[in-house]
Length: 231
Image (cartoon, rainbow, N blue to C red):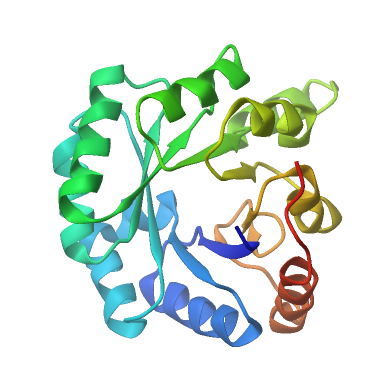
């Protein structure tokens, strides 16, 4: 698939989320993500607002579903989400329920391997259970906690090629990537490039980052869209 740029709206104010989304789309971003902080702050209302403002844009609802999978996916689909996220560490029946809801309501299911003892096996399980995409994810708390102890901070790039080789569905790498690393994801076989903290969102305040973000996003989008995905 052609590389896709997704912006993670990890903010807690819907007005700010809409303004950031509008700016990101001007810059060439393809998909919007209602990030977990926005989901917690605004819930279904936030997704409905994004759908109302951007009727033709794919919207990922980063639910990080662990239980009640069918209902959560159904609610977000009816609110306007085109994609929902379920965790690999949920029970496999929950993953199946989200996949079933995805088929029933026409939404894509993204399976997230955050926290899996074996990240590659977690990704493969998500595919085997019917997920349409795999999110290879090193978590916010994990990265910051390890770095605070003076140890090397893990990166999704550490095992990205192994994950890509293990599955046939499109892969997205998430978790503290630098600008250069994010742009390079398609070259590692991961065509879904997500831009969140610290590139576009302040990771401490969960507000849109300062500076000329629109110009930076335009440059990133141009660099990503010019690539072809390799394995």
